[in-house]
Length: 469
Ligand code: ACO
Image (cartoon, rainbow, N blue to C red; front, top):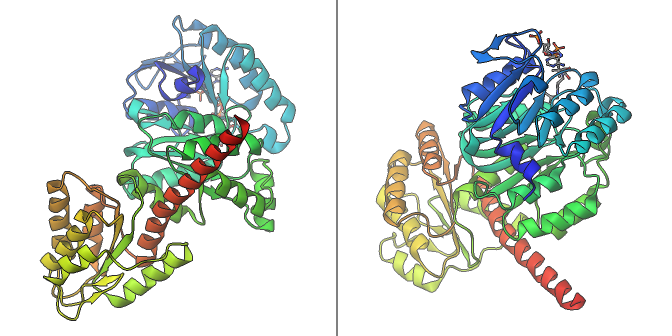
């Protein structure tokens, strides 16, 4: 594993060059986030005009820090950043996160090249420039000017867009989506998506990698690394610039080439990458994957108390390439014993609108425990004879009793305020739940499609190995 990339996420010490004395300025807010989020290593504010900032001793320059500094966050205007690399070299820095804008994205290609050249001379890897920073929750490191209280979890989020990335950081906090890392990669002058994939594939704190991507420079390398990664953990990509006009917008944003949409989609498929159409979809998928045990194949069973919602879910599954088959006979035999005589025992299993709280949970648990079932999609429509909050509590208790989920389970609870609280409670207990059947079905399809594409990638790589050896 690269020592420099490691320093980005697990530095023993961090310096903020351009740590402003003034709240509201970027350099101040980055330092404040590092302090407030509880980074345990050493922190060095660098500012020639300050003695103390946020209660910490400030240093006039990096070279006046008589200690080694692993990570340097650079928040001074672009024209000063190149010289900062020389000072960073003096204190043994391994990585620099360069916040400043004003490089390739506005035509200053030469300045960007010089920045990387100078950094490389000292063995420093550069994140950025033109970024909002980096977060790694296991180290309690929030070296960004985004929101502070990122929720720890197992999703690594890499974003080429700064403002969108910051906004989504906020969204993850409101939605209680757990994050292992947030990396703003901006112009990708040095460290790029592929370098980060190589890090996160072996990162025990990351279960799924989500990338907001505008374009990649070295597509061949990206695909070949992504192929290796998807064999071990899923990559979800939101590709911006899917349309001709969108591609033009990408060029003026980060200076990237959005490329041909078909080429990108084919490359993603080849590498086993899941491509989400929207940001919401991407985070829905990522959250579920980060909570759930691995899907190991086998039929998906849908359990619903509402026929219509079951049909909508079935449509979404089919549109995503997942076709439902008849449920295992052993499961049909078991649920027949306690379901109403008019229940439909196909797939979806329609437990009917007269089912009780106990009956609905019992049907879900039967499917979860059945060895011939691979995954379960639970659809619930609120009725006057059931209470979704009671269903949520009962299910959480049953799952705890089982020692955790034995296979993927995704739920949708459609209805009023009680459904909202039930969904919140289920998610807080590691059971992914959504408010609409199409959302839950899309999540389940992503889980199944990941397993399929991973198998396809593994098979292809094995075949290639056989040819070349
Ligand atoms: N070493 C250390 N400190 C220095 C140095 C130096 N060589 N030179 C100046 N400083 C101090 C300054 O005195 C100042 O401190 P003060 O406020 O206490 O006086 C502080 O460092 C910052 O320097 P300023 O010149 O005031 O720079 P400013 O904070 O205005 O801007 C910044 C710096 C934020 C890097 C700006 O140039 C920039 O590029 N902004 C855009 C950043 C951005 O948007 N990045 C993309 C993010 S993603 C998105 O789109 C949201």
